[in-house]
Image (cartoon, rainbow, N blue to C red; front, side):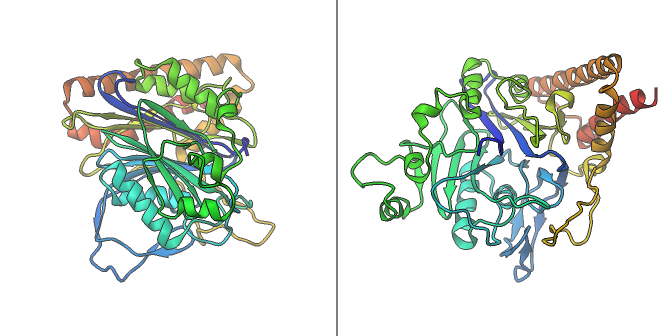
Length: 418
């Protein structure tokens, strides 16, 4: 299943610089799928009899949900990756194993990402939210618009203080608390270091003949066909991703994570029918007086996109330029042929126009990339200034992400019209 890939990374002190947890993800999806970046404010829900509609099914609502910023395929309710106001970040990955994938409509892994972010103020609480919902509602359903594509999920969940890997097979799961650096990439990867687990996970593996009950229990060996020893010496993206993290261990910054997500030789920056449609990097300072900063591209091809910063603050300005148009019905049509609606948001449109233009002009290609590099350098300098000083200009903060989006659009417009 290597072609259907995402890559999610985390690095914790002392592997990082400045006592910061660094999180990153490339979302690799169908090449023509638009990913939007949206902000959802915190909310109090008084009418708990009114259920919450996710992508396919309804679930019970909770009394309070936290503010979240999400990068999501524009056709669904959930998210590929995102963060909440408490500094919790989650990214999910498609995984396959011995257990047959359920096509029955339930919660998507992307729904579970959003639900975990909306309902938990720490990484481990988000893990609890996800596994409780998994037990109650299950996971399943089509994960692509206009194409049959289903899978189970693994998750990387981080906050200012710790990170967890959660891997699932049907309703069964195992979780590993991260030490140092860790990545996930479309395969089960938890072996014998299991810090939390579904209470019946081992019994089920024995019933299915996947584990003899005598050897040390290995989650990946039991629930998948992956040979982790062989995988760590292979050219797989999981192996290459770990090598890139390990190469920079002790010196990892948010710029390092951006560089990893842009890496082409490893395959992490993916091209083809499935490509990197959006990317995210988060900086989570362990000092609670400093803000968490989340950077999103909202466009494909991270090497030709600007990572733009978002900081939670009261009265965030609407993210209009990364919000896709809405259509009714909002769920994929099962009948064939199915024509996808045009979900491109303003930033995506200009980014796409610029890509088409520079394919015929090396000079304009260089001009645009130089301007994008200068803009991203300004982003990096502003982030460092905020994290060093701890000072936030509230008026500027509420417009931070929208303004950088407009600046990126201006770069494309000036070269498209010239």
